[in-house]
Length: 186
Image (cartoon, rainbow, N blue to C red):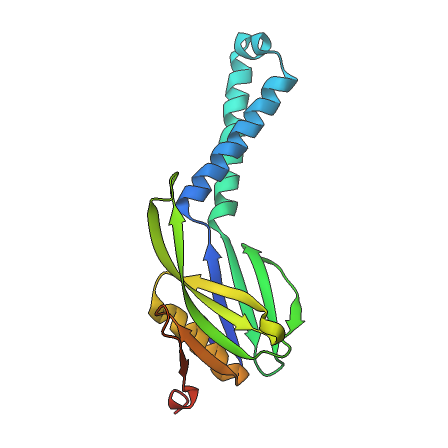
């Protein structure tokens, strides 16, 4: 999380994990190989060593470029508190895609402990802490997720303070508490 000034917040929502990077590069490589083999008969490729060198070079450049793109990808959420606006962006290098949206009728911000399961038989379980914006009619949007409670709490507190709304601490199951934000404004 970055604070540019007291009227803005930047939340890094997610970065691509190393596992998903490897899977992405692997499948893109497979896609390119399959396209090359579909376009050129296998005997013609193997018969000439120059073709194998060219294929190797194309694959290397492709994988290197793809890895650079995947490594620099981040998703951010920007808040302009003074104008009550929010923008989700996808960023690669210096390129940003996203639009500002007006934040309307926010009732409160919450930090919620969410149980997730993974693996083939869902045998692995872990907790993430969601930071949510709650609107009228009990609608909400997940702003971001953290592994640590403190990081999620800090982001939620900063957003709630900036937007001048209440904050709900739902990190302990069946023991939800409203946070007295005025204590943190001093």
